[in-house]
View 1: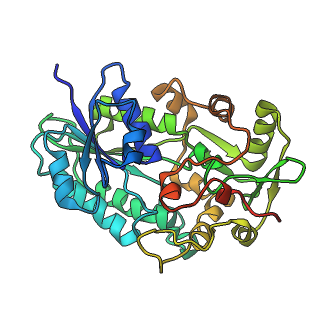
View 2 (view 1 turned 60 degrees about the vertical axis):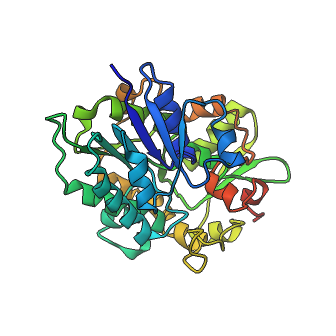
View 3 (view 1 turned 45 degrees about the vertical axis):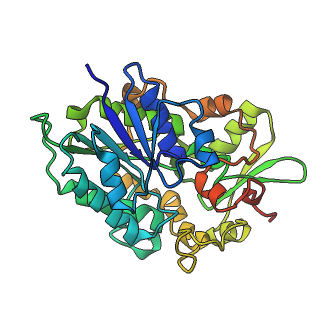
Length: 351
């Protein structure tokens, strides 16, 4: 049987690259094509140096002509638009328009959209939960819910949605990096209370996407509400201390206190819109969702089901051991690197 080709939109970013790896390293690998604004850049070439079989094509998810060209001869597409580059209206329009274009491609059979929990809808549209990077994707998910997705016959395009969560890797380089006290203690100062975060490792994200492409009929018109593990602030600190042998503790703080210690709080949340809301403003509407456990309203992220789909599901302990994380910051997210936010700049300020 001929190999199937998958276009990965967002394939140069952390999540997208994990999906690329899963697809090309599968027992029955896919041919993978990646859309990149700068496919010949040193950074992109370095990212894919161990995957010479990946097809790198020039384009952007907001350049719909380039998307249409990249979709030619593809069986499937994984769509992960970047809400930290564009704003909410752009991300909504991109998701809808790419799906419309996908329906015109004769070879395309599976459209997989990467989304996040739709906070506004889960809270009856309470503006206190209007985090921009979640709700643009959530609106696209709602749009897809209204589209038909027949599993049969095989000649029709179907859609699936993969809802992810905060990356474990955000603990290394992102909004969950701990402060390191003078005595070396890793201090996780979160406005989380006793709430939990439904974390997702990048490795698991790739595995879930692969599963959906391998099981088109099972996931036609369906959403996979995925996670790797649930962790409270206290559990994060205790697990890091036990596994890495470093001192660590959790401190519950207010959202404003968290913003005040975030070094890049005043940076725009969308790099293309410098006059838009800031990172601090955006995440002030993100944290309360965890502290108030609003995700419980959405349904259960079933760990037993996650392990059925992905037998190698990573627990927090698994991930700490495999990543060799010791609580120090490292550069992980492409958006931070592109924006000039170094690992040192991601370390929270002193209290």
